[in-house]
Image 1 (spheres, one colour):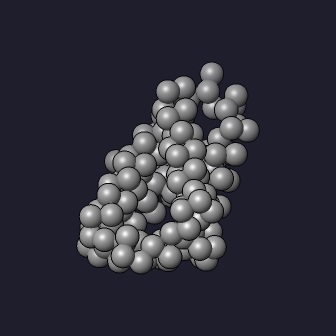
Image 2 (tube, one colour):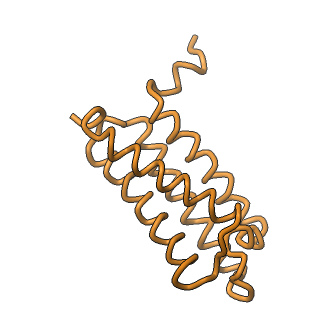
Length: 134
């Protein structure tokens, strides 16, 4: 009989990716249930935060979660690893542009959290590339 620990990949980075993915699954689902969940991130978005934009943001989160889950369980696969890195690049560019270019987000906990997660995850994956990808 298998234990839950057998389902969790070895290493801190794969476990971190699973945690980030689980958060993205939950946040993605919340955007389908209540589109105003986007107000936490897009606090200056006003009328631009609509049911449609909420569902689109939910789909993005679920897609990113799938990529990150796959990378966590296939951490030595070059394509999975790099695709996961790109998911953090896209997230980082999006959140920075929404904050400083389009100004739909302001520096608050709702935007600082994803900025920290995206930038620290991308940096960690970049620095550990040679360790995981062979």
